[in-house]
Length: 393
Image (cartoon, rainbow, N blue to C red; front, side):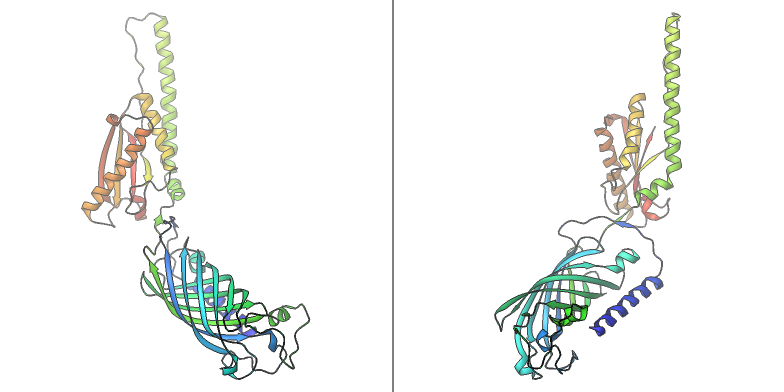
């Protein structure tokens, strides 16, 4: 057990070192993919060492390298990443084990299988930010499941912890190094009772708790294959963009307030002149000066990334309706991604998406001018160019 804790501590120090020495990269949010995205399957060769509660206090070697204590097997698993940091995995492993009742590996041989459900935490993504080009992912996990000892025809619940190291080959394939420690009830290995000369712990210490249960240490090496889409889409940090453009938004709000004040003043003037029976009627005159409002999109998409962006568009739409003004919607794409023809088409789709939203807000389509600007590189970082702007003409 002490050796296991040393291994886990070393792995933790390695992860911390990785975090400190990693190259700084731009952090960003990711959008949630569909249910069928980010699934994976795994296959491993497993080396497993077994300890039984029946041998507590005897003089058997405790080394996991002893042949009477270990055996080779395999594991297969299927899982899904719901976010870059959180995933679930269902794992089957077996099938050749040991019931340690002597130092003779033939006497100890048995057959078993374990089926477990595991919650995985990708600390590389959680601590350093999502990076689809990262080579090494450090993934601790916790598991619960059931074990069947086929030789003894019995079942037992199991629980454990582990660390999965994934070394990326490409977006589809990765090499696994999985180390895990499982704890089961006393009939996990099919043997109940104690061996002659054994002295079970009667204390409630952590060491006694572990020693009085059957347990295994697994070291597995194999491959991961990612099914379908294996990455997560970047999402523009809309709040950061809003902060960047807050000056424009404040200016627009101030201009709209000034326009409303001017409308009220002119209406008062008109009412006074009507009372004076003026010969030349005076019409209300409105002047609206509008700063562009931006609506942002994900890379390659024409669907609005955040519905919050449409709240500012609604303010422009209300001002345009009040003054029967026309609105210009200009779509953009970033010039760093895709061909010129693709970006021209994408920028038009983005502008049309915002134009459709304006129609839903009560603006006549005849009062909307749609412009596709194609790929541009006017804003930094480049993701900010994936947008459409709305302004009163």
